[in-house]
Length: 79
Image 1 (tube, rainbow, N blue to C red):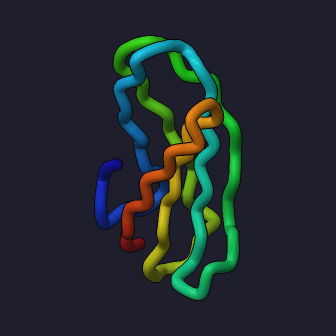
Image 2 (cartoon, rainbow, N blue to C red):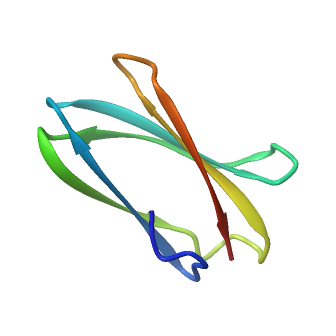
């Protein structure tokens, strides 16, 4: 996930063992969900650009969940 800190967008980069779908959720530090979207991913490397220009300055948590296995990874980012 880059850049961190970010301004108008972040790029989620991930490698997938097979084609599937993911859900990403961006939450503020208080847990309020500010962005959420499902995205299809291909086998191999994937890059997903997330527009963040409408977010206020602050600390956010980005959670990415594999829709098949339900595995979730969360990363802290700063605007």
